[in-house]
Length: 493
Image (cartoon, rainbow, N blue to C red):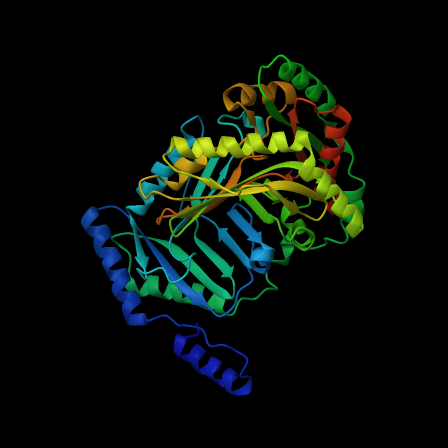
């Protein structure tokens, strides 16, 4: 028999008497929600077209990564993004509307798709109590505009999930998106929402263990996974340096792809805990299009964030290793800040971002000098950039203009980027593409999919890249590649 909200209220009140540390949740206003659903049904009848209802509800506590490990992901899209040091994470599951696109207009196509969905969406409640309330669109953009069928992931994927949950600095919530047609029944819809809400209010983190079962038993098979192929990074760098010396372009970013045999058909989500523990200053992410493929990583680079009309981006370029002791770490950091080669590479990225923003009429303000971004195994030069976001400029317009930055592409973009595939000899797919979300308030966040790996039932593909400019040395760039790849390879040990 289904629990009623009245029974749950009584149960929680009893718990509160026994344990004062338990915080009571905010419950559904049944009359208000049923009135809202009735209006949605009426809209569907009047328009003769199904509508979408987006219901946002607060929770007393929820752990999105724990939820991800507890649910059945088979045939379902999912999106997970967390930066542990920010105490913020979000998980989206399934889809009530989704689409894939390719070609140079793929960002515009995603924007048009979202706009068409938003016209059919009614929100409950209307106000945005939390940043993650309301309908959100979750996205994965490949590095390339077009991809062969062999790559698997589409050049652009966007979806409005069945639900998303979030944890944000001690605030927790659930957003349900449901389809409403003219034959829908108010009481039936309400019961469905109530059941979903109860499920998350009392979430059972022990369900769905099939996603992480036998993880320890699979360890030996993972370690014995052989290298299937490895792209020739050294040859690519040699060719690029020749073209740079001929002044074809100033900078190009070249990557190496390492393909390992996935002996045990392990899933990418099994490694998210380790990524979160080791790289808490990075953006930990996981995306799947509902197939056996998944794309995970720990990226240090945010392409774009817009919140309360303030745009934030950053230039990250120029790298060195970390020292084992404080004095060695300081010496390496000081050397990075004084490195002519790294500073030139970094400034190319910063100036390109500022120019790209200016094309959209956005006046970006950059830090005067770069700072060190120290991660677990590598440190970078970082310059933060901010600007006021004009309401007439769409979030995706900015993302499209900035992608790819010289940090993953090259400079000038028009000359360097077309050479990347020819020099590397493989399609990048989601590596160095964009992973993120945006909402109907023109807010959102996009991170760059680097320090990443793609999993399927047969292989694990690990990617890492390095910026090549005049003065780059093949052996030093190779060392940087190995250092960056180690972030993912170490997880497989």
